[in-house]
Amino acid sequence: MTEPLILNPRQPADACVIWLHGLGADRFDFEPVAEQLQESLPSTRFVLPQAPSQPVTINGGWSMPSWYDILSMGADGRTIDKAQLEASAQRVIGLIEAQRDSGIDPSRIFLAGFSQGGAVVLHTAFLRWQGPLGGVLALSTYAPTFEPSLQLDAGRDNLPVLCVHGSRDEVVPRVLGRAAHDFLAARGVPVRWHEYPMGHEVCLAEIEAIGQWLQERLS
Image 1 (cartoon, rainbow, N blue to C red):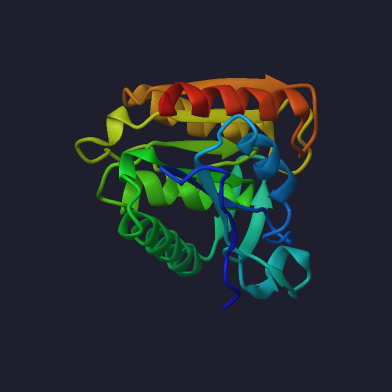
Image 2: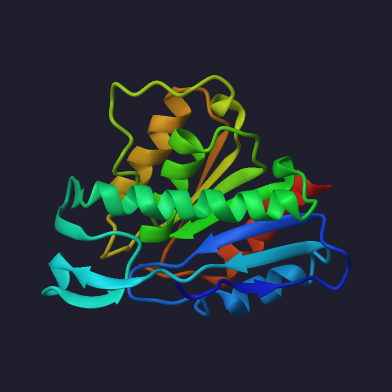
């Protein structure tokens, strides 16, 4: 298993963002974004894990960095390998615990994920991790395990979330990202929605909004 890329801040770390990349990308994908954010978050560590390479059904069975297999996809959702999703969630929990054990208060640990990585962090934060967290950044993503009848455990309804999506996203339709937002909002979670005229990507205005959102919670 490839070790995460760890970007330590200029000052002693008292906060951490664990940031998962999307399907087919790698741990270096968001390194420039993390470095840019550290300019205004001088005591925040960024941990960028690497997904294992494994076959992805919708991509012809080719092996690529993937947090879980996607078996099929449509306008209304994705069919996924839930066992692989659970394995990825457990890995994220291990990263949270490592940062906690290094001395960072879990209430200052944030989970961020783009696309497939976002699905993992939403599942981890709301359905698997039992302790406090600082918040979740759900970027151009969806929530395949948010079932309509699901009720959140006590304390999950105060976990802040920033959902960001492109209005022209051709990979993860906007409606799927909005469904994840609406699921959380209906359960009283303090969730924000930001939308940009972009495809399946990250833009400068989004990075600036992420930085402001993190600063609000770390000040």
